[in-house]
Image (cartoon, rainbow, N blue to C red):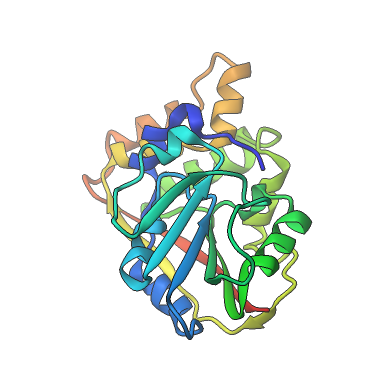
Length: 242
């Protein structure tokens, strides 16, 4: 599992979109027992905090201590520094395993072996993510698309393709359940949009090798954009049982 976000943990927490309760409710339709959940690659707890009200106990794990230190406190949540592929959880102890916007960094074979070890016989696995942002303002959206597909072409880690392919090409050795189509929708200020774009790993790779600021054209366009921008992300969600 790669760790690309430790050095920017606070910015990542502040700038990344929040998940909707609708996603959690869609997953919970398939979860018969709610004693113990494990949120892998939990980062700063963005998805963990949505699980906490529904389970007796939640373990949230990540390989980034800096990210975990940004996570919110809950009495029933235990944050643990460990790799998703090798946990210290007891066998057949978990009702739900979740991974939010992280599974594309995992060693699939090792991770799925661990998931199947810890899940109860009626346990559920859910991979959650979100795809490329779409900005309703056509001019700004065109520049974001240009940044993503042209300027940063060759700077994305190879694993990013799983996001582009909407998680449909990740290995998924489970009995898959049908899910509703969903989107995350927000109204962001121009500054929020820029802050989000700065969390892109490819942007960091680009800046390491170039002096040019790849966000300059978007920054200029945002000076004449509305104070609030409607932005949408497609939700990626795959749910399976053992």
